[in-house]
Amino acid sequence: MFIHILLAIGVGILLGTFTGLTPGIHINLVSVIILSISPWLLQFVSPIILVSLIISMAIVHTFLDNVPSIFLGAPTEDTALSVLPGHRFLLKGRGYEAVMLMVLGSFSGLILSVIFTPALLVIFPWAYELIKSYTGYILLAAMFFLIIREKNKINSIILFFLSGILGVLTLNIGIDNVLFPLLSGLFGLSTLILSIKDKTKIPKQEITFPKINKKEGAKTTIVSFIVGAICSFMPGIGPAQGAVLGSQFIKKISQQGFLILVGGLSTVNMVLSLITLYKLEKARNGAVAVALEIIETVTQNQFLILIAVTLIVSFAAVFLCIKLSKIFSNLISKVNYQKLCISIILFIIILTIILSGIMGLFVLILATFIGIIPSLTNTPKSHLMGCLILPVLFYFL
Image 1 (cartoon, helix red, strand yellow):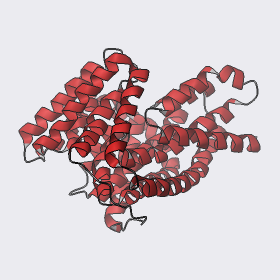
Image 2 (tube, helix red, strand yellow):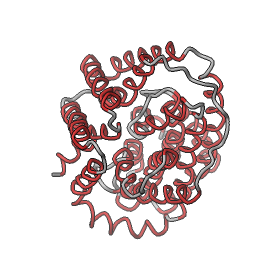
Image 3 (spheres, one colour):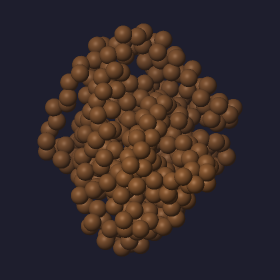
């Protein structure tokens, strides 16, 4: 059993590295492929071995998808907001530092989640029943605070509802993998196109670890853990919405603090989803949903195995992030950034057509136009998260 779990962890790390570094290839897609061949695989291994592989892949993915979001401007749902401060870091020669901040958030959030797991096993069932009816109102409050704190409230409202309406329309017309073109347009292509227009040059990247304000770092980690816990058992709220919520609890959050927050949320959400799997028998993301299909009911011993797997895998993920970020840092300043941007744009367009068809390409174009507006109106791009918040509001309210 022990050897089999180690082998499963090894395969999971390889798959998580592939999905994390490859824009458009999400763990949900690979998880579904594993589910489709699970009847054959289960002839050779037990369900807990297969689930360990999936969880290993998912944890590594939450660490490594920070790399393309910072260096390539290719976001996923969980890392979309990190593109904004991350790109600024990259243009200052501090792309490596940006990734390390997100890795710090991921790792510290994971450790905090494991430490508090015994308490959360008791709290989650009670809290789930208490809060599940108020999801819409919590998001409504987050939207309200997000807008009223801005000086230009009219632009913020327009931007929120433009992206929100696009989100409502695209999420309800049956386009495959629609989040890829939606988020790539709003946060990725729009940034890359402006970089080409401005003839942006990427300076030589410094391989230095960030100097962090310990008080802000601790506060941000705690907030990412609390909000990540809420996201893990509340239907409709994921790490992206959690980043909007979490930023409201920290006054004058710095760009460093925000990257720690975003980095921590997706990993905390993934780890604590194991508790909802174990105690509530509910899945809050695609990878855990596949795990639930395979294992059906998680025993106490199996839950402890999965927690141990997340701890082992997290150390490997940190090591991989450090090494791969150095490689990206050394390469990014040596290439023609305009040509790189054009190559990434073409890659995203081709991948959109493959994953989402011609309608997905139409969504990508619309999203890109909307994604350019914040730069033209000097409005924070965070309001573009209306693309995910407004559809959830409509669902719950």
